[in-house]
Image 1: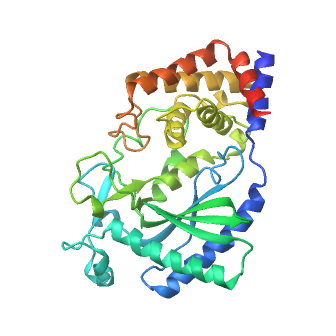
Image 2: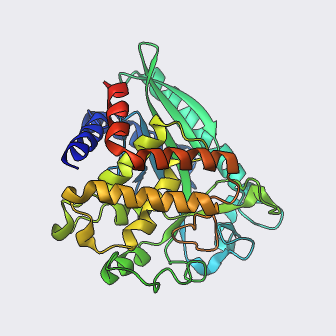
Amino acid sequence: MEDTTRELRRYVENHMVSNMESAKDDMIPVVKDIAQKIERKDSRFKIGEIEYTGSIYQKLKIDDPDEFDFDLPLLELEIDKIDSHMSQEYAYYKLQPQQAGWRNLADGNGKLSSERVVQTFASYVSMAVAELNSEGKYKFLLDLKTDHPAVTIKFKQGGKVLYNVDLVPVIKVKSWPDNLTQGWESRRRNGWPSAHMIKQIKRSGVNLVPKLPTGVNIPQRNVAWRFSFNNAEKMLLLDGRPAIANNCRRPVLRILKSLRVDYKWPEIRSYHLKTVMLHEFESHQPSHWTIGNMLPCLQKALERLKVFLQNRNCPHYFLPGINLFERFNIYSCERIIRDIDEFKMNPKQALEALNSNLT
């Protein structure tokens, strides 16, 4: 047990992030400059407080910090102005009379087009990037790629891409969508998250991101916006109360993400693993997640992932009617399950092999 724990900690160290603060110092001034240039080009795109999202800001990044994610809020509104009957995950937003200035980015019925918003936003980012490159203000050459819903800026130096920065234009919804998250607040838990944290999360609201639906029969998909719970997830994953400051919840999730990369698991994405772990966090008392208990915690987390794969059913953490594994290939699931079984049968041997490949 002691030898296995030692190999596990070595595995964690092999995937530790380095130079994160330096990378953030490089990114943030550029993103703020771009946001200001966009606002000057089009007063409608009055970007609110830039929101840092993704694994780096949730302290879940593995390996070197080469990818950054930012949400750029364009509008802020109340939930009662959202039509969410089309799908539990997606919504339409119909412009209000006072928002006539956005009409050229809406369809004939006044529904704001996520597709047009991204295209227009991307054109402004492109102009801002061209200006920054010509000004020579930064040590990087900036390049651009549009990949709905994000506009990706590539930071190049000496012909090499050092960072990829995703900018996503979002709509901020100030109220929590109780009708969509029915049961999330009141379901049975083992002490986490606390009632106080649940209230804080609900007060934080949600975002709508211009992510076009795929693989689902949704009419007018070009005007569909998807609910995003990035802020809520960040609050949960950064829960830093003194009593649990030294817990192993985030390290276990980072291990799962590392295993996904090292075993080359198809289908599985980082968001899937985050969802699995949020369900797992709820099923144990906070005292379960001690650093000294990291290996048993990992074993239980792998078992939960296995069960979800066997059933091909991983419920969305906030929207229980959505199954994230619904379209998973059964053969891919079986392969991942075999990897999990082999790892659990002899974790020390598996970790030794993984560590040797990383050094």
